[in-house]
Length: 184
Image (cartoon, rainbow, N blue to C red):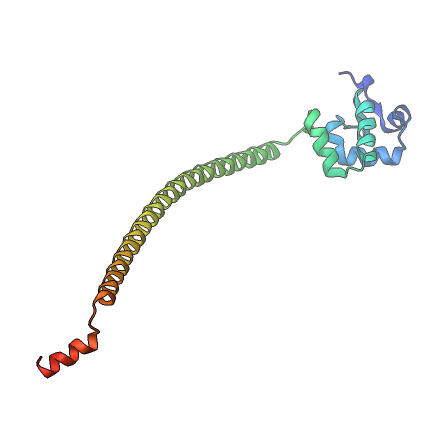
């Protein structure tokens, strides 16, 4: 892309039909999607910036906030990262160290995710074993309850049988008892 194809803020404001002040705010907030560059103290934008600026205006017009507009732009547009052309060796080295730290941090995060996934798998197995144990205990409780109910039914049946036998005898119990006392 040649420098002549780039537009200044005032040129782009006229082309896009957006006030210059609003355009500068859009550039400050969403400049990564506009290919904004500073050349000789002036901000210039690429030839596709007018359409992107109109889209940004429309997204704000739909009631979106800056974060939502960024998310919508990120979903459909590549972001441009501009690195200064004359980076000092110390800055490059610092950037390299920072990138190494970021890579190490990402590796640590990945390791932690792996550990957490293993822990989740272990907990799922433990939960399944606990469920199985509870089901077995519940079955044993039901069986014990059934056996107890059967034993109570048998006891009730025997008592009822004994009561019927006592009712069918002709001699009242107290007479039998009295006779046993008298020796007859």
